[in-house]
Image (cartoon, rainbow, N blue to C red; front, side):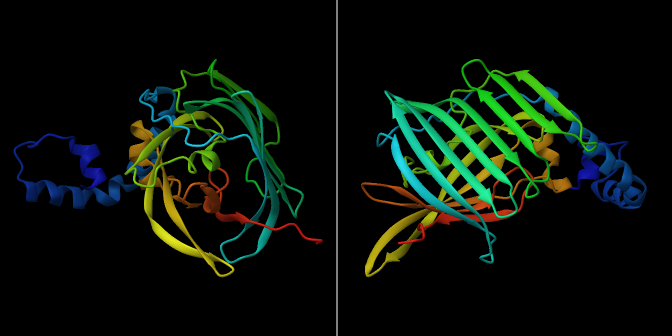
Length: 295
């Protein structure tokens, strides 16, 4: 349906007694006149929707298939054409049923992406806290974000267009499936035959907003390590923005691109590769396993 028609006429089946053909002709005649108005209206709706965004409380907490807690891996961050941008590390340390997971990328231009998530794994994964720092020229907007899942406290520290530091603090009723900093962990525990898994995430642009991540399997692919073949499953991660903002985001080019994740299947699932944006509004990059040099 033409969005201008929807905004102008609403959902009424008849308007002023006009036929469908007549109404469509009117829409065509007024398209040029209303074009700028509608675009501005949609932009205003998108900007103003956040304070009224309903928070969905339904949760798909991912069940724990294998205990997490001892891991140190090396990663490479590249453009899709293979240019190396940053070297990365992912570590996990456990204390009881609490696991601290850290993902850090050090860019060649001096930028840093540093994400530390603490979660519990009593039957299902539950985020306790997440602290993310992204700074340097590789990021459109340097930002520091902290999420305290139990209290719902969200803090965002950033610099505006004039270079002045701003701090946003909000208390939100966060759902139990909030998954900031946990994507690399959760995809290893999703059953490949699950048609869809939905979790929540606090997105900051920089204003905090709770969005949904839909994780769907897209198929399997064989990979080789030497002469040994292994099977991977590819997941697509779609960001779903609720409310009015979610309705108009695709029309304004604000819909985040999909992220694709490859996971090794079998008794010991493992992360293999990811292609998607590292931060909100960022380009699609590739994250893959790397081997330390010097041996």
